[in-house]
Length: 104
Length: 134
Image (cartoon, rainbow over all chains, first blue to last red; front, side, top):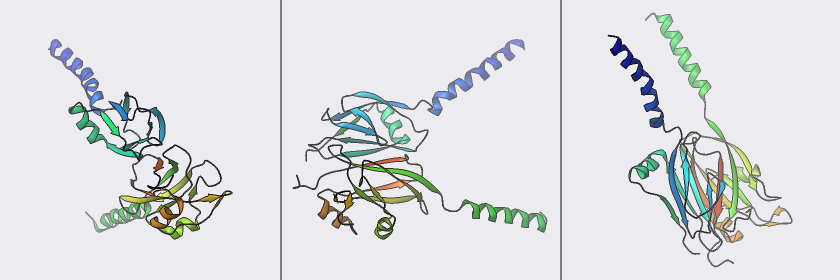
């Protein structure tokens, strides 16, 4: 009886811990790269740097969509929108975020 | 359920619907060109060029700034057009009334985006040069 109660208590402690990653509170990390690598990258309108490969956390806590823009003076600017579902599919397929700019 | 109770429930529902109204969201709009320089633009909501001009919905005309707009969402999505304009001595030389006019007189392409209520507050548009313009 005592053993069962202890097991139940342990289960009650573990269950919320299992639920935490399922909520995706920390977001989804994907490697993002832009071609050409010296193109500037903006995420949700904020400049995050240049296009060389880097991990980025897609956090959907403040908006349901995230947009990524890349620009370079010699290329056409590009924009891509990401939803939680799209990122989850990319995580499942182990796909990175790649944006290729077209020359002007 | 008694008639009185039903009437009270119905009135409460009516009051809630009336209070809800049309949802709005405050967005911040900014525009750059491909070289990341501020680009003067007129911001047009749902193709209403007249209101955009009347309410001076311009960005980057006097200086590098952004435009905050409280946007109502009568439907799930609204359409934003970032129309490039020409500026001389801090004044817009010609206020466009169509996307074509904006393109023809600025040397830049306009850009259109459909926004949802749940989209990021900051909306940056990066405008490409018209092909053939330097």
